[in-house]
Amino acid sequence: MRRASMIGMAVAASAVTAAALALLAPQPSLSQTGRAADAATAFDRVASVMLSPRCHNCHTSTNFPRQGDDRHPHLFHVTRGEDHGAPGLPCSACHGRTNNAASGVPGADEAWRLAPRAMGWDGLSIAALCRQLKDPQHNGGRSGDQIIAHLKTHLVMWAWSPGTDHRGRPRTPPPVPYDDFMRAAETWVHTGAPCP
Image (cartoon, rainbow, N blue to C red):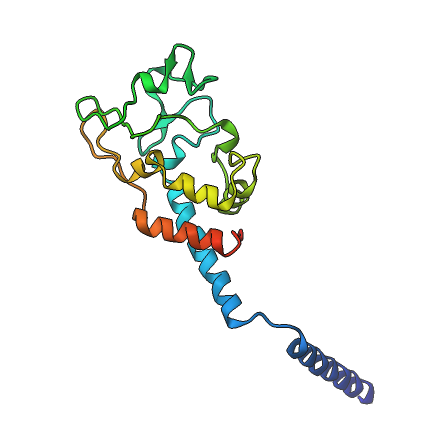
């Protein structure tokens, strides 16, 4: 009985010591905790856009671009080529500087192109997508500010005015309005681009 009592006292003393040490350990400030929470929330918003069909269809790991909200393979057996399209059939052969309402072919005021295979996001978790976006070997050698600059290009901005498909059905824009997306991306980058 006495031994049980001594063990109980030792356990209680250990708990008190651990609690005291925890209080003495450096604690993140409320501003650091808030910034980390802001960064995590911001990246969740960024990822929801990047993994939506408007971005993900061109950021594919396949040998072909994808189309539509269902991400089906590109019509006409278009495949990845050395110079943004199959030999003799660059993306610009069909994709112009604006959406073509008559044919449903999308276009942007910039050269239409498929992201390199190293920038494909197929099968990535949100955490893996985050790590890939920060990796110069998988992001075109871009810094955080250069990623922000890329997100301001006409090609990226097209996603929020995607026009209609070949049947006249409106394409679904990303789930976050563009201005909110950009605020989230800038928050994520400027808080150190932490990954979940």
